[in-house]
Image (cartoon, rainbow, N blue to C red):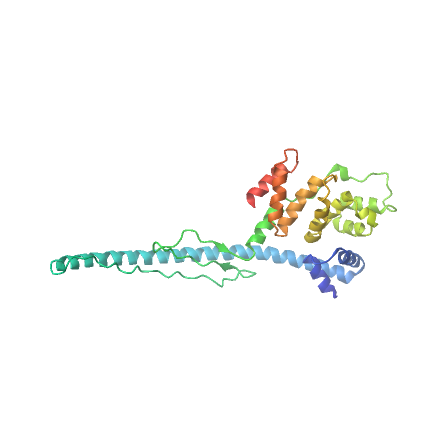
Length: 299
């Protein structure tokens, strides 16, 4: 696997724990790979920022186009109504003149005129923005008032916004490493210190080097999951948090629940986080109760 493929898989969250550990080690020791990682990270951030700006401009443009079309259609509909009204008067007058010569009967209703609705499609905004077809009313010749502009990334943006709004790095005094340990000789102590110093990338490397017994410790696993969130390895973070919440007696169970709900939203899995957040919001003793209710209102 080439360096470029490794980096792409990393940013797509497609690496398994073993591959992630290997890559993190290589980045530390391989200058070319480290440089490529930084280039990708910078490029992705630039693309995201440019995409948001372009999307906003494009949506403004589309909104103006739709408003213009609405005005044209309203004028066209008004003209049809006026013509129809005038034609009805003409028919009534003509009918009145000939009513004595004709047997009584009812006028056959004229077929209802239908107005074709223009289709707005193929409007590209970064990743191909598409605008839904405007629907034709069956009972009257008019446009529906609500027209929704959608894109394949609209839900992604909604979930990203929710995640960014409610996510904050976990900081608690209980995680501050004890001064009694020797960081140089104690790998667990080193991991905790790196986490406390907010060196999340280095902390993930330190965690991967721990013995399996230490990795199975839910408290350390929770800190590791927080590191993964910070380095944007969301799928792996989701997996680790899933493991932690299986044990309700674990020290950071409530915290793991909340962050699991957030990362599931980030990964566009909405059904399960709704259940988790509902459980949190119904627990008066849960410290994340208010935030859970706020997220549920916005989902």
